[in-house]
Amino acid sequence: MNSTWSIRLIRALFFAFFVFTGITVALGFQQPAWLGAVTGALAMGLIIILDTIFVRFSLRDFSQATFGLAIGLFCAWLITRIGVFQLSYFQSMLDGEALRNAVEIVIYTCFAYFGITFALRSDRDQFALLIPYVRFRRDGLEGEPLLLDTNVIIDGRIPAVVKTGFLSGALVVPRFVLDELQLLADSAEPQKVIRGRRGLEVMEAMRNLEDLPLSIHEDPPGVSRDLPVDTRLVSLARELNARLLTNDENLAKVARLRGIVVLSFNDLAIALQPQLNPGDELSLSLTRPGKDKQQAVGYLPDGTMIVVNNAAQFIGQTVEIAISGALPTSAGRLIFAELKK
Image (cartoon, rainbow, N blue to C red; front, side, top):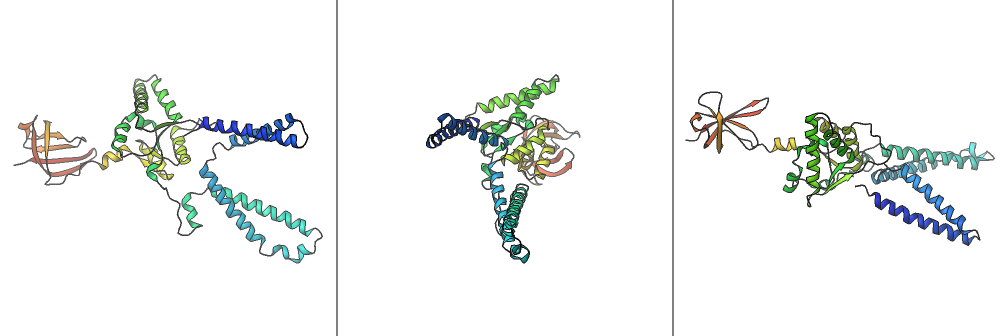
């Protein structure tokens, strides 16, 4: 995501071009070549300084600012065309034309400024108010990058899910997430050490997979590192127009409130749980006794517990059962079944 080497190459090429152009112009005006070279180098240096200042100004921000600038200039043009400067007050002044020009410059400048700032503070959907029947949407959502947080990396299921084809788009791991994994691995608490090392091992395993598009997003210069990781994740997701892959429910809620698409393995697992209804039949391996003497308990692959009545003598065997009912509990659904006759 961060093409630092390409930006440096572009800067070097343009620096050489500016120096060459400065030398050419200086020789054309009968001036020393070194003066032209220094002038060209200073001009390019000024451009590089401006580029560094606008390092967080993305192409999306530029397009929004350009659109806002156009709206502001159009509004200023309308105001200057309503005939205010044709009043006798301006016509009778000796320097009325100069005053008119000065006022027009102020009007154009103010409306240009407010047009840009209003556009940068607006979401894309709000532009639909200005352009009827047109709505800026997330085109090609499946191609947008997936931003990974610390918890979902430690979870370790990403490579297997990606291989199934249900996840698309490049996977992006921010540098500060890697730093957090390293801090966990170097912690004095054993539990944090285990989580941190597991996360780093998962990252190494993902790096070695050829079919897994994974990149590290370096922190741009000038970004505050004192903010919490979750806050920086949400801000980076908005900046990159990326989806957020996380198992942290609180982070997911905050991200959704800010208009970010959130993917969660927990939500996916709940959605994929089988919906067993009374009368459904299936094979079940009974593993242990139930609460009552005649009951036996078995588990589905997703961990759903099924209590089978009158099956205590079949513990350790696989039997055919028929679902008889379900009871919602705080830990999930408790399903009851009978032996199939």
